[in-house]
Length: 202
Image (cartoon, rainbow, N blue to C red; front, top):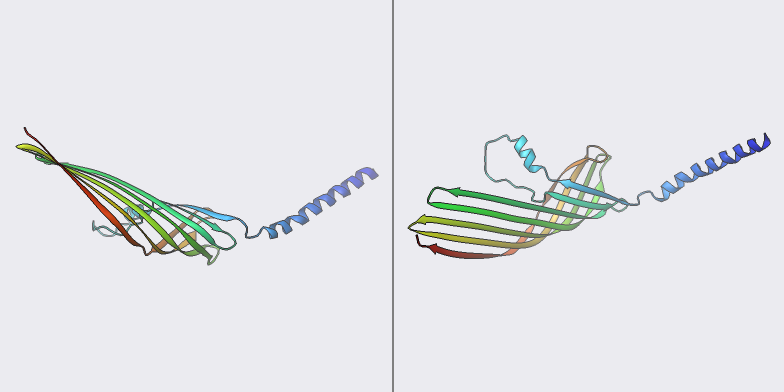
């Protein structure tokens, strides 16, 4: 009986010692590690659901469909990245003229930022981005009148730049956030245009 009692006392002592060390370990690692975020741009969906006017005029859009952020929990400093791709293919044929247009647009950004915790629900941040964009547009016109004439135009625009950005996020849940950002980018680039003209006698 004495051995059992002694064993129980020693066992309880080990448990007390183990749990007593847990708060110290958590305090030591407090603020360590990183927060990672993966975002999806939903501006287009919001405009389709909440369209309060019938205007079809183009509006400002965020071209970065997917975004990624990683920030230090201790300092708030982190790296941000975004990528977007747009492919559009249209065609029109009135019996005489056939027009086909294909647009391939790629946008990429990479930057640094600083995050600030405003409250348990709101977080803000500011940073600066570097941008690289490529627009590859192809248009083909075929006119069937007498001789069949095909004109192909290819336009390639490569642009780069950067600028400051600021954002605000709201924690809907622990793992789901919704946010908005404002950016002021300066872009410069080079445009190259190629033409090819081909006539086929009927």
